[in-house]
Length: 633
Image (cartoon, rainbow, N blue to C red; front, top):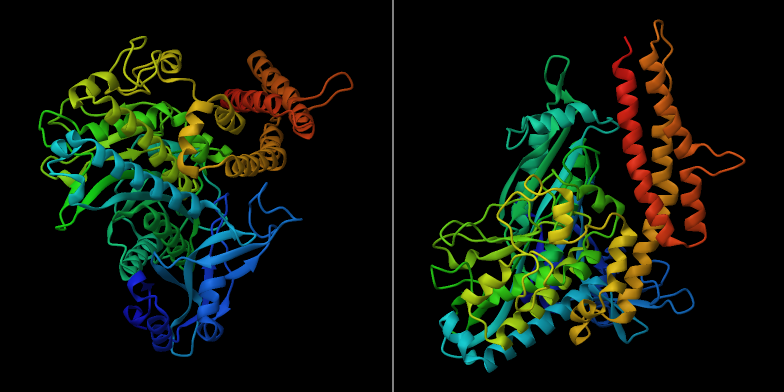
């Protein structure tokens, strides 16, 4: 089977009725069409329309789409059961991708394909809703406001090296994501100690892939190239252990490895759609080769989690075709332009209300722990000097530059993970950035003044930024600051999902930044908040307490001869923690029970505090039990 002969992509310039019908007729391997809407939770719809039906009813389907209801998509406060009509309307402005079922072959050996068309969700025939809509609106507002700033401020044009705003054909928001994921042999249980040791010794990072992992990775990269994603590389990441040979050495078992795939940037909405299709290909190809794939942020405790660093840039395409990076400075003595400074200042200042759209899950917060190259502080790094681009991997958002390549200047947001809703991540980030850009331009600040402002000390007054915060550090924020110093200088990192979401209530001025131009509305924010609270409390009540209960039950006393006084003291420590966590009495309730009761009463602040305590006590129990077992011969 020659996979190159299959259909992979239909571009916007070829999605008119005649072209689509001709293309699908020439590619009988595409048997179905699916309109893919994305709800507020980030989940995508997937229905199967036979190609024959799609071709016959093309005009009607492209105009009216297909219908679903509120029980099929997560849109609380919007599509309720008594007001649940939702239409899924195809988007003609982005690429359409064919998704192939490698396990379902036609008579000629080709896999059966489904044309997946990114779509807009419309509630009650009037209101466009869902994640893709929010990103589309953010792009629209950002472009409009950026154009107005340039048109009304000649100093910007002078700094960028253009005569006037009339030279600009379009403002381009570019984005890219770096996808990390774990692969393993099905049903294998992770050996945390081996994984942690291998990670600390850097035994796996950028190592040569072998066996089925190598095969699946190579096939994945080849297929992604067929889609036109322009893959830059695929490689091993820091996590993993060496696979074991089975029998004569022809096969491998006990596979547990972390990988990363990077591909070329695209315009913001297309970049989010691209990422969704890349994930589909990765899952399908690796599973077809007998390997499980997980995009969890923290699938294994005490081992590196999966990040999805998100790159954010802004450029202007001029009428003559030239591209001008709005973040790049033509002055070699400067890190970036005034617009670039404004963008990073806006992102950092408003990050408390951006974060709920990035890290509002238990899984996300498990990854954001000091020491694992995952950001815990709202701080940036620019580099030690303009001639030396920053490579500080401990900050929230870093400035990425390449000397001699003006188009490379951008920001890398390091907090997102593969399960973050990329549509909302990008939308919220650009809205926050625009707030800083407007403040900088309207105040007429020079790049020299802005560098001084973003480099301010704690307690120092500075333009736009808050007095009692530090926003820039070129140090390793994990090792060169104590936890107390980090909290004082960069703000307290949220510990639970409730903490993350509460920022939407406690920062009304910053929340208004996201609502500019109707991008985020009270309705969509409430919908998102309810969706994430529902996910948090359900996972806490059902999964997390259950998993911690299994940990408690695994900490059993070991019968052996020669028990010493130290052994008895160690076991008493373990037993006290087990009882505190999981054993009810007539006079008091254990911690697990108190969490369940708080959730049942919808006392979310209490449930949040108790969850934080549970996390600390379970870690204390694991440590105490390991100490107990170490002394048993």
